[in-house]
Image (tube, rainbow, N blue to C red):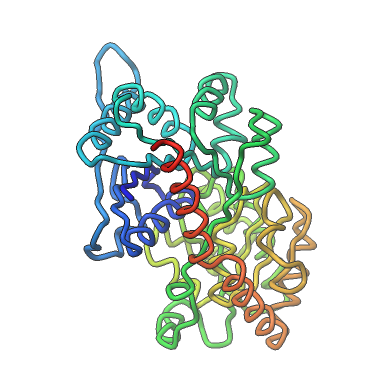
Length: 378
């Protein structure tokens, strides 16, 4: 099939999930066209791949207006690709602006018969999409989609509560490439550059937005170092980065906390880790958690949103109440001080990732969805 996938290029779960879906669909022989403002970060580490193409959307600046006309320019670009490439499916990842742009694009080329799929990833519904300034147009775009996909049952329920569509949302969980995310023998040399032999490597990976509660990461780590020698690697960037950096020095652990900024090789960092801290207010899914599990890294996270669908409490790590720094710290220390428990949890996480969140299941679910829409339109 000929499939267009529109996604954000920036670091975050939606862009990563969309790009991985595109890469794997292309490997299965589909013609996949990624549509974005820039090269998605998960494509940066990939060499040329057959059947996979990137189309960059240029924003239009007009002096009279204060903002770029991105939604409109994206819709025109989408319509052009639909015509030029003969797309069967136009799959938007994230409701704003892509589902809206796709709705407009199909109106620009009604003769194409292209089918619209929208995958919801979380804040496009719970934060941006539910905002009064956007909610009406998001609702319209969802109702004009031929299929709406949610990455978790929790997000499906939230979408039902906010926008309706209760009977038509299909849940397809994100997946992880376990061939990429795994323990590696060569990671020992990499680890030696990050921590001393006696130190544990604690990781946090996010886009440092308020919902990620990065201050809680630092507070938990402050309690960890009272019980176990450790370093904290903060991978990513975003609006709360500076506040977390200041807090680390105020709490006296600044020299143990390393802010590494945006990194492409997330799998490489996870391969060095002993623990992932992920205290989010909520997560629609928690792709970083799944990638840690595949890498045999135990996780201490919150129980917010869709995380209980990914984690197995007490088996792959621990889920704690949102904001409960003391409980998270106690659970983290429990794992870091018991190497046998850490090993068991890591292996259990890997097994759960392979069994429940493997690419084959997700790809088959998407192909079945696409083919059902394609058959309905012929």
